[in-house]
Amino acid sequence: MFRSGRWWDDIAGVPALALSSLWALPLLGLLPWALHRAIRRGLAAPRIASAQRPDGLPWQPAKVPTRNGKQLHGWFIPAGGHAPAIVVMHGWGGNSATMLPLAEPLHRAGHTLLMIDARCHGDSDGDSFASLPRFAEDIEAALDWLAGQPEVDPARLGVIGHSVGAGAALLAASRQPLLRAVVSLAAFAHPATMMRRWLAAKGIPYWPLGAYILAYVQRVIGHRFDAIAPVHTIARVACPVLLVHGLEDDTVPLADAETLLAAGRAGQVRLLAVPGSHDDYGDIDRNLPAVMDFLAAAFSDLSVAT
Image (cartoon, rainbow, N blue to C red; front, side, top):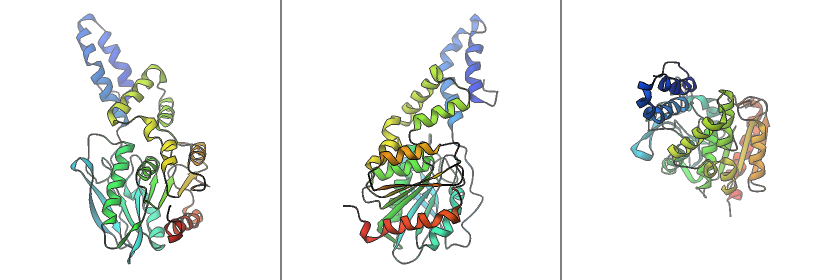
């Protein structure tokens, strides 16, 4: 039934197939199944194995247990001593290797790192689906794992996330009051708005098909978009947050970062607008000092939240 290679064409073709003749009327009972299958296929994250490793750094493979009896693949890169530690989470369809440009400078600055692949991504276990809340669960599992390592100061933990991983970092931080720092790279403000942009880009009308897709996705992931939207979760994050956003980001506009800045706790959230698009994190060498200064202040004993 699905031959077009484009799931939205498959959806459009299902009614035509079913209505082509009266004898085909029993196929109408298959329409919900076919539609849901097409939605899942169209929204599934591509799985790309990590082709690179953090060579030149003292890394070791890590297996991190997470929800549903699954395991996450990761790279543990200790800095020595009782160092502050950071979970690094990629975005949708990415993996740990996509975050490697950050590894060496963060490690050089004295941070222990745990770079992980979310479920259904990279070399981690698969699951029934991937979602922002499941990214957040994987971040929390990684934080728990990090806190148990002798090389890590469990009182100085942070998260760096990109795109969906950034939204997940904010969701996890809203539930982790002892977290010390979040660096959000290119987070969107609200998943419903993000999906509506995606629907428009694919030429899918919002009413009725797009609205049905959004409702179905919320039912599958078990969360209302409003409950997991970064614009709402950031208000519950107690630790300092640095929003890093590319000025040329045409996937998530800078206005989303400005919305998050306004929604966060006063004095706790900063926005660093940098040259660059959605995926390149801007000019890392030029902007990294500001990120490092933020982390140093957040991990300082003087920054402990009260």
